[in-house]
Length: 248
Image: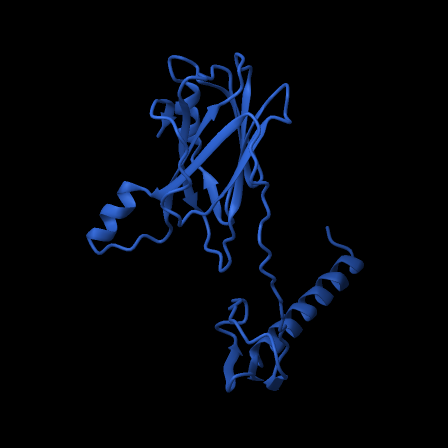
């Protein structure tokens, strides 16, 4: 059974909802953005009930005077974000390791493109190969691989590497934006390679290079880092013809 207080609260809620609905019915906003740099930049767009909850980004010049004019009925939010491109600085000297990174489009994506079928998202293959350069038997080695914005590692590929007969990968960890691979059986006489697919889960307007690092688990000062980008085809090559490991 409902009491009077419940009824009053329900009526107030309905009244508030109706008020919101009324305001939404009046949503008809027009925006004009004008920037003067190397000519004139003009952008006009309109917010209505059909697109009120859709956020649409666009780029404007970063220098010069910026003028925003709004008119119409309703409420909207206009957000400006200024992004900076900062070069990733990586130490060029590698201690105890050499490392090479290769990324390329997955063969299935290439085939679909040849058939004039444009996939919604891309799939790249990451291949990392390293050599152990110290004059001693290697212990456990870790690969710390940062993932580009909008990409995630294919878990099935990581499981396949872990389940190889020689237990080349003894364990892996997936953390936000990173993958850690733990290698227990590293051969110092040939290249050791790992590979897995990078699935694009959302599109980003700014995908910067990221780093992959290989280091000794018990002596982490012995390490080597390289930057890579999902659109690069071939990373830097290092000496050594033999290969070992799994590059899915």
